[in-house]
Length: 413
Image (cartoon, rainbow, N blue to C red; front, side, top):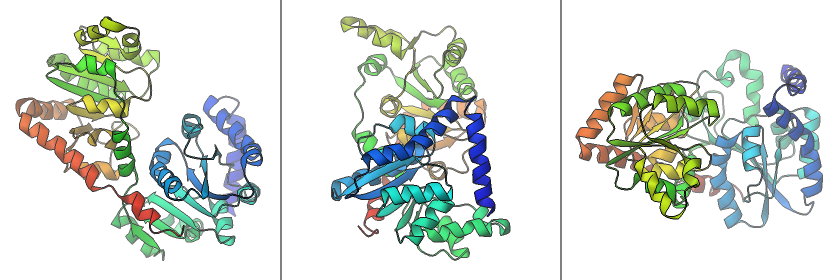
């Protein structure tokens, strides 16, 4: 089969490229070490529920399911696998799973060996994961397999004449829990009818994050008595060139920037755009002790040059901006919207269901500086309107929650 040929060619490419790229090298090593981890940790007497997430975003979608399952059904153990280092390296110590490892590449030999070692009683594949050999062997073994928070579009290979053979992989799923009606209709056209529209489990996850938000004394000192605060999260240079230009001209706003890339070159680039403003980095502020911490309030811009704080930082803003929309695609809009703040994002958002919903509920797509400035001017002139749009965003998130319970109440546990 062509698929297996492609997998072996991909395997060869990864082996070669791993010599030159650290991220690929981690994945290559991790996949080879996976079977050693499984041999050491798998309890042959336990019943494992397997969750597979490609990367960090998919993990966040699967996390509410894992945590609710562990709470309601402690008789099961949880195996969590990742494809990408950006997921595994960040969450390899996650306490909500009993075993965490890379997923060995989808060869027939690897799939048989993996499933023979783990013997899962059921499996959850999050969003876009369709590994042909793993799924066919799971079906052959009679293991229930669920696709969660999946979303389908007409341009995907499954719905093209040349993708019919590979599209058979969809028949291996016991049930699809999809995000929208369009996905359900597309699947029905190719004979897949075991589907339920439940929405996206990420809405449940951001509500969990909100409940567990950190208190951040440095940020609290920075925003104290500020009339208005703007938070830019996961920003890239095209985003920064737009909103920094505006706030260089409107200095009555305090500005918090949490860039997606926190390398020194990027940080210096941001600081250059902010020339003439009083700027402090979060790690510099951390060095202030006791009474010195109040001095953070003297600064106009706070740059977050560390990870793990952004979801809590949105709490301190009156308006938010989520980056990526002028590049490969926007980052997590829901982490901002859940705090009842209006959210800006760039034009590359068509594939993001939450962006489409927010466009009528406190979210604002911009394509240029002029778009951004016009909307910000309206916020600045009309406090009631700003508050109304923020509340719409928050209500949108709350109104879309509940997918986790819908999924777990439908599976055979």
